[in-house]
Length: 142
Image: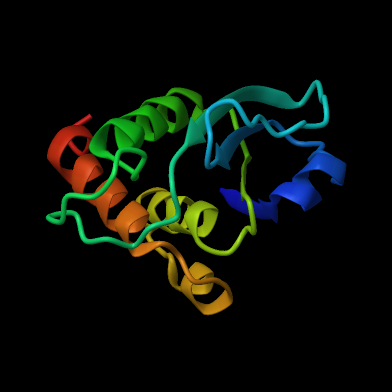
């Protein structure tokens, strides 16, 4: 499984993959939708909005932080498409924290390795830990 991580600006002008893929589009506001290039190879798009915050899971913060509900949406989406896709395309505003956090957790579970993503990026730890916690608590027996 390949993971392509983009900034918002880069995804809006990138050539889409030619292999079957899905997109996880992350913005800060639910009304601020990225303009994704159309492609017949795209099997689905999941749009999420949450702040880029590394607050620990046990710290209450403002509404809009990455949540267990967001993690469930990602796992449901990815696991539903897992057998048909060769690539997961992700983006957030800068392409440095939120989308790498999602990609690192997905890579950890789906390929058994997330080291490259931690070498190249600064994955958001709240996103990464929440996704792994939810997977192991709710999805690992599937």
